[in-house]
Amino acid sequence: VEHGVPNSLAVLDKCGVCGGQNDCIGCDGKGGKLDLCGVCGGKNKCVGCDGVPYKNANSKKVPVVDKCGKCGGQNECQCDKDDPSKTSDLCGYCGKPGDGIFNRCVGCDGIADSGYLYDLCGVCGGLNECVSDCDGQPFGIRRDVCGECAGNGSACIDFNVTGGAGSQVDGAGPAEEGAASYVGVIVGVALALLICAAVVVLFFIYKARQDPNWLLPAGMRDGMSSGLADNPLYQSEGGWQDNAIGE
Image: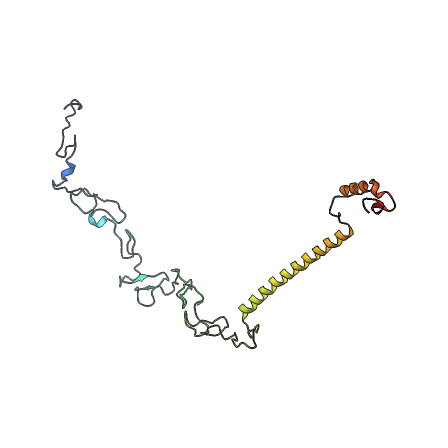
């Protein structure tokens, strides 16, 4: 064959594969496949519950899952030889599942003797937090903001308005009292700011009357004073008044 290996004797099989084993037509010529046990079209009967093929073993030696659910086990959980249907539960009891006693000591968490039970709310180990203190039923009647069972929140609020404009509602609840306190704080802060601003303004007015140039730096004020003192207009006793221009 061109480009082939001399003296290899390899030929194309029926599937067109050089040196192939006719895999495309199967072990039976009809597309059948060998199973893990080497049987053409087989069903892996020699494969045990552990996933290992036991090709040279008889069916009795292939490990299977016993009645206790153990692969290759010998039904060790069967505690009564006279009654194979009985098994040992997690509590050490020899009986049948569903007899009302089997695994009785097992809590809702799946642990023996844990003491965990489902509460009325369906929570394992819960504290019945969903049970209403009004009717004692899970997810039952609840209390309103006034503490009344099945109330609508109006029991602690008096909606009878007395007087004219500016009248108040008596018996205000916690929400109304909280809102009033919040408004009071805002008003108090605003008044305090106004008082501080008034004090600052009065201080500036007072200082300006004492010395109009009090905001200027000391050096600049001294320079202005010395300049006026050197001015001939201010050297006479009459000062500016004796100056002809001032007249």
